[in-house]
Image (cartoon, rainbow, N blue to C red):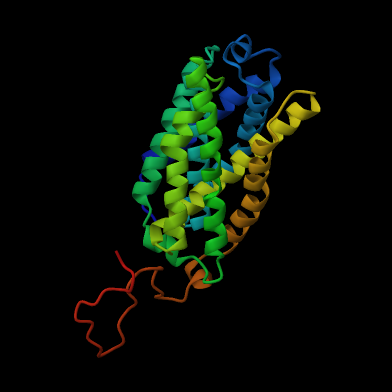
Length: 295
């Protein structure tokens, strides 16, 4: 069985969707909704606009993924988890950067609901069953390479961080430093290695983080292009990395999801998950032998 989720997880997911809708729509429809906070904390309106737009567009995808996961779809699990990571990550900027709009309590609610939905999803999913649904033609190394792209942000963030330390002045939107350097980039690197080695947890974590990577690439690339069109300054190096997340990332995610499917399509009946011990032939003693490379 791929997963066993309690009803409370679907309730949490539904509350997450409602909270995301309630926070994103005013930002898109009410002029000046985020002022004076964007100016005060050095945030770009383009990025906030793209985030709210992405949130609205992700709502149908979240609803579909929850229903699909309930029917045992590995694709649904990956997309649901990716949207949860997105909610936790991006609403952290609203929470930690102190955007004290009337909806600030809901920003915190989205962060919490996203975090606990992700915990419940991972706790209830069998990583070996998930990996067993992966077709042998899934481009593991290409997907792992895309997951490793965030490592390229490390020198950029460190240079900005060190410049701020030298100037004794906080860098605008400095929330990205602890989020990326402490959590997201290490998680993506770990998932990339696990997927490259074809470990079951690598398939599960890798699928979830590929969804998040593509969403991030679209938001950040779109926001940066918006700034350039408005005549504002933008870092071309950062834009290039955002485009890598958005374009090759979308290709990797598309191939990843394409090669996931029902057991009868993704794997032969009784097929073992990658890294798991295959069933012994009748009359053959295993003597406790473990699968090669199993840990």
